[in-house]
Image (cartoon, rainbow, N blue to C red; front, side, top):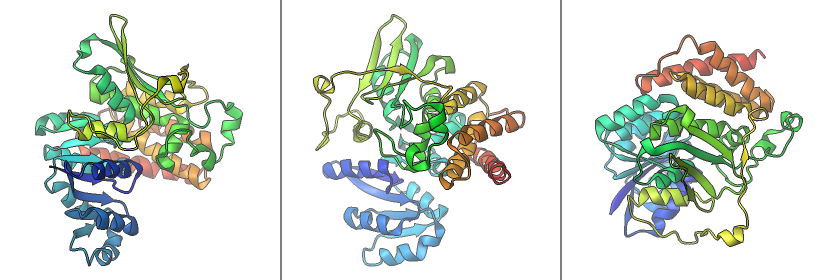
Length: 387
């Protein structure tokens, strides 16, 4: 049996992972469960799954967590130390699904232990991609892409040579504003921006999808995962969300990864470690029923976050680190009503310009990436407050 530790167990990726593990009790057992601060949710999961260890990142939840699990005998803790203890426990696969820059340190710790890391925390590669890829090689870790787009690219690439690839393209649903005018988008509410037409990923990620920042982050992730230059990476809008990634070859052939929009598909591909897992209640693709698949160019005039992310990728260094930190602050400000939807792109672009000269080099390690992240967050928060 394989032991699986889940970082971000109460989120959408964590829940999909747990669903798969429960479908294959003869193949998997759960080592650790890690979440943010939801005591009730993690206690319910622990009662159902009987993991070896449970951790919450919010240190203040410690007493409540101990009380909730007192009758179970399950070891538990709260705070960063407890999260890292969960990561350090024996595991064959660590599913890294903590959202945002908060996932960098625990994901990197799993990598340093030489684990197989099923990576759903794209910010690890956005904020410290050079360091992560270098250390994965150094410690003998394996990074498996969980994001549906990158997983599709990996499957479409197969055992082909990257030298024979002319381009890789990830798809975007277009989000809730795909057909909206710029004027209408400008007055959109957080609720409208979070109403994703295909996926349910949590409010922050849904809003990133509405702005197409999520696609920008995924381009940067693909750059590190596949060692492709920015000019060999692209985005295309595909509203049906059935084609997830395309590999264009130098001879004109194209291979693509297709599946119904169900995150259990890429997660199962990672958990299977080369074997295919059956997904109960899975929706298998029926192209005749789908009828037609459509594609259109991404509009960077209406969705400037994609343009900003492309620029950060091209600039390299710490530009993606700066961009991600500013974006997290900007999205939070938009949710609170402090700025409008296009205020997100405005703040991120201002931050990138402000720190361009200061942070030309890529972070050497996670500590450096998190220090840059903290400084940009402070500056961005002040910029929102004084706007």
